[in-house]
Image (spheres, rainbow, N blue to C red):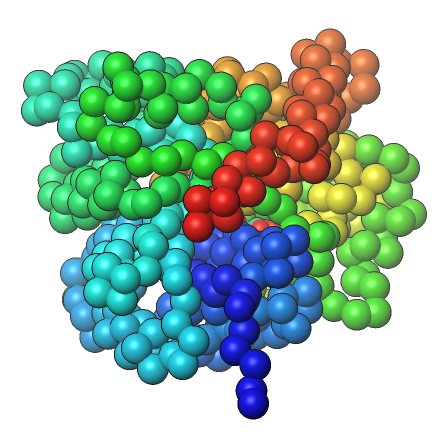
Length: 478
Ligand code: UDP
């Protein structure tokens, strides 16, 4: 007689974008490798070929997880209006829900919990229908979670103060958000759809059985305390908060190739902590003027670098979002004349995509100029690599403020030129701060980065706070 598996079975639901897929796969791996769960990962895709090529390179999950690509959703068939990235993702995920429902309904051994990411909260209705526990995996930090849970409760007067009069937005028990750091929901008053989508997500999150969050107790003690405090967030949300991070898997990136990547071989030949890694995440893009200033800033700093470059985009800071993980050959034509030749002894220009996790773990890396996406931030932090914060979109401005003003592990400049571009001298200055061993400010940033690396490793080690939080998830019947 066939044996029925008694292992707990959970389903994870990943929204489109490699920045969402990576942490979800990492959580799945953790469930299987540490707790012997059975894990099915449902992936929403906009283009199956890209999704498959993204997954193909990721070797570690293969024998562990049951990955199901849902039928691709074509956004252009759903709307002809230009939408904010959050609204695009909400719409795409919504379109995938009937396929998710059928897939779950047809499973012989049905999972007992459904864990979704930020854009997947509408799938909670499916979890309810099949009597599954419903969990959120919040792949960024507690501060942004606090804002999201609070968004449905911000009254009109305070919202007007923030949006129209540019006053800080107060969040109960947490650091306020300065207008210059606010998220796009509050910069574009006319985008009612974006506002409503975001508020709805906040409302649904409060109804979850629990929220797993990719942070750890000692990184954000004040915010986590507020989220659990009956007098602060407890007034409108009793959801269980479980900080389980930093969840950063082994250093096997999407896009890495065997045998050893040329980039990593080049890094092997560079002195310890001498190279600045420059990358704007999976979808980040810069304008042509900004690309030119960045190229000059890097060149003038005379520090070694690896720069992941993408063609310029004038009207979007996330212009490569749906084309992630594409590799390109040849030298980009959009960099200043002669840049690649003049800097060939100093740096590497990598078109489109690089094996980031291996790069950041390499001892030759001394700094990371980053768009401050939360995965990139954690990958830097777990390696003790100090940052230059260059936020582009979504909650990245909040992350950048946290890294500079609250944690002290990043340099940042807000001194834009009249055309809204960060100039080469400012860029050169930031690079020197982080990379120059004699720079006093840089010294503090580097030391602080090492301190945080230690707290991160302690949190996830056996007996650490994040280890314990993940165990609570299991003990609770999850
Ligand atoms: N990434 C990579 N190579 C690249 C760019 C990005 O491996 O050239 C990976 C990076 O390691 C991270 C993810 O893509 O795990 C990006 O996630 P993040 O949250 O930093 O930013 P997002 O792309 O979601 O804005």
